[in-house]
Length: 575
Image (cartoon, rainbow, N blue to C red):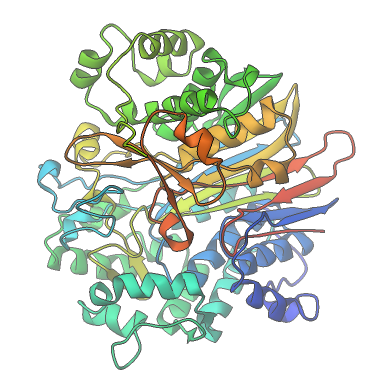
């Protein structure tokens, strides 16, 4: 690891005067268009928490690499969100373009299944974006926890590509935990939904609720002293404080007290994996570099781009203006659900088609699969038309290195079990992935759906991107097509109307199209021949919304253009 000679202080005391107050105020902003920024020396963009992006920019200004900036940003994001949709014991996927070598590295710090969990199909819990169960879960249990690699990933990525001192990356997050974070309308909404669950266990209650047991409301300030102390210890001692050290021991006691089977060995055995990127040509002279298997999202991303090409979407009228194009784009996006079906079900639906990860990234696979869909295959299953929420960071430094990160708790707002250990939230990602866990096996890396990558035009790296939310696949499909096939700028790519992940009826298996209110012409929606519904505001968060952020780099001038998400307190910064 490279060392930095000069003293480094990334706290707001060393920012440009007025920036601290400005970016704290931006935490309360609800965007309706993308945040944008441009510069020559560095840029950071985020899906949530503009303040965190400013912290990452400070890492660049003080000589840090794009990896330093991305990790500083991610650490600050968790503190700002009180560990609700993201966690220091969550998962992380990182894709890094190393400008000096032209090589794209990927880091998998995603979920491990629990080695002692021998009957995962019996893990309690269930969630749904459709009617009935809902997204908040049904039953608390320690068995719903998985082994998260976020902090191991921070340490490993910094060890390879960081230039600032490790402890410096934690400074903004510690400052936020000590001084307090503003309770935004979004965070207050989280509290309204989860207050009863947060009150169930004494440590969670004392950490995340007010002394009288009530939830925080918009305009309050939330201080997290336990978290600040935990982060200080990790900064000083490294990730082993969590993975086998005192924090880990406390975690295991809490998980087992709730019926979980995780042991300290699960923590000490956890290893981050590095690999070269999975690459594929996706048309228009563009090549995408993304995370390889066992990251399932990279495979799904390439498969969807190939399907879109085979279906002719790049040559058609845009799906925001054409019912036929929209129906095709919806069908292409919904085929991602095949990733989660058992092999015997896939064989019954599409006999003879190879659904191995290696096959799914080929154009031949897309041609075979789409021909079956056009011939009337019983998937995707849409509801006939009746009468008439993780976080992202992308950072680019002055040397042209590009780092894209997706990290998440993979649970709905702290999770139903609502465990909190010394300020760190423990989600319940096993509560709805029982079948996938069973197929993966005990003590192994769980395939994750994150879609993060770097886009090349010829030999030049021109775009780093990351996506999140229940509709991340659908958002990434549309964004990459907009950019590569329809020639949109990075800001136009984000601001283009997008459809969400559909709402699936758990009884019938049929899906209803979900779109943001007021963004699609109703005549276009009526023309797709299947049921559709609009959602507004906070309902989008648990209604299948996808979030996508990116930084573009001009290969000739080196000019950077960043764009953040267009529907919350996201932010893009540059200098």
